[in-house]
Image (cartoon, rainbow, N blue to C red):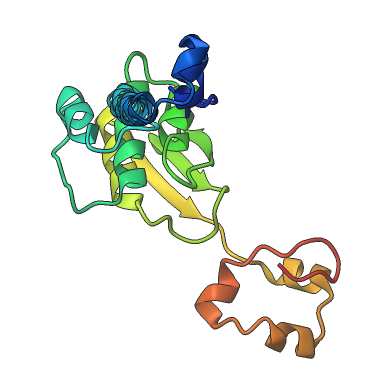
Length: 198
């Protein structure tokens, strides 16, 4: 991806001219206008180039979605659209535990643990990167269902705050109240080491 031009284009153009143009107001005006045009051109080129990469694409996400066969939903947040595109790009070939991890890890907060339960013909996916239910769970489910063979069930499990963790945090009632969290917020909270509040 192109970055901002680190140099002063107008000054560089000025430096290439003979010294007798240094005091010319007409030349100074021309250099100012031309350097603005060059910077605007550079900005537009950078914007187009950004569309070639899923991580930086904005208005080009719809083209990525079309390539991957994903319905275009402009109302969906860009980060969720990017995650879905990346999962489609990663989810080809033979399905293994590492492929499933790669597909789900492409989603925001998608760090997972995958276990194969051979007795029940299912794959157990436990979200360990984020507590609670991820915001884009429906997209994750659709992507995983697409790559996991149809004869296997998929069991999703989520992690929450355990009482032992709360005990280990060694918080006083005052500290707990000072956190100002309701029950839903508390059950997805991850305590830091002993006595610190996150």
